[in-house]
Length: 500
Image (cartoon, rainbow, N blue to C red; front, side, top):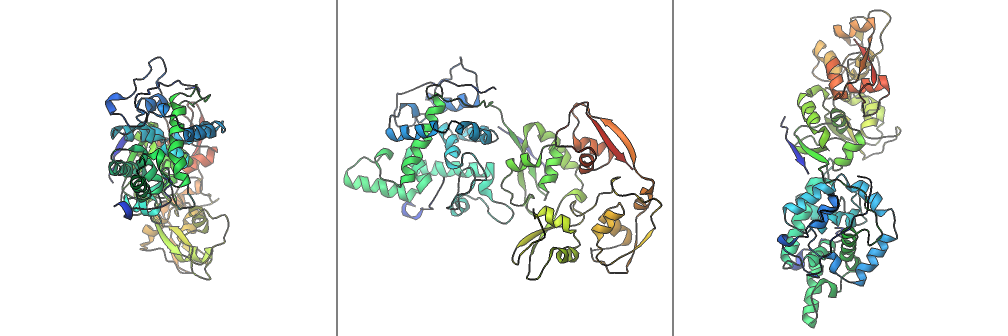
């Protein structure tokens, strides 16, 4: 397993390439009207106002290069008024953006691009990585499938790179860099082309040139959406430049990285990853929205994002995670006449496991549907050998006769052991069983009859569910079940542990 830990600080409706090859507070901004429409060099970035607290907003202002406050245009005024008519816009969109904006800002700065570009996902998706448009554009940067493929954003059943926070940001900035070069350094034309395609903008420029008209963005005839697109971005920048002037309160955003990247080169269940990082599964999925089925793909390495505060713990826990606790899948396409119970028996998987993995509310499936089936020995289908298994009043028999409807998962769960233990104890190479077959149960399963030993543990500073589970050799899910826990532990909290 390879582990790497690195702290990380349009709606394109057409793919037209062929034609042209703290508590919230209002913050004041610094106005610079010297260059109304052109980008300045990075050396002339605005000097931060040291009288104001340093935040991510002030960092963005310092990198504004398009001089949004200096552009006086009724189209911008109209968009700014539209934002003003939505008093909760910044509150709601910033709540989403707080996970990603610092990273995007750092990437924009590293390329010496105008920091207004870090605001583009506000326009494209309101910083929602799960945004999906009628034109099939997806992600923060709203790549359509064909453009995503051009910029190496892989899209398959397991993964959609258009929703990958870091990969899509790299692709978007690559695309914007190329557009800026194509339009001779004019960022407004580049932004327009990001929205409607470079062929669309190229034709509008050629049309004005032929008529002897100016060829800057403000004088082009473009699709209605594109006519509003750049003004919307500049209106946002004007408000952020001087929120008090426009009666806006910007939610507090610290200038600190939110997530770190961990390289994972083997398939893992994202819910298991959340446990290892001691964060909620919702938080992990919010940082890793590119995975379509709560699991990484079976081949290749991926960058999992976790909050910075949890990165070291996650990297260590992942390195120590046994193969038996990882989750592997095989895909199965439902055939006419199939039922969940038939599929479960055929593949030695419990119906409950299939329903959970595929987020099925009931038992209804349809022909052609693709199901993910967890594979035994990889953590999902297997019943952990914990004290939570029912204990018999007397010692369990050493031998078990397979009954109709039995599978390894059911037998393991019933007898308080694991599938891999039964398989190893009986020399089984696969999961197939036959009615009447006699199985020898591992000794560990038979000795559970005495019942579990109750132990009270007081949580200490620095403890996590993972470290406690590892110390007492029990499952994280078991600790949660015994104590009705959420993802957060508090020092001094008492936990009940049922130990074998």
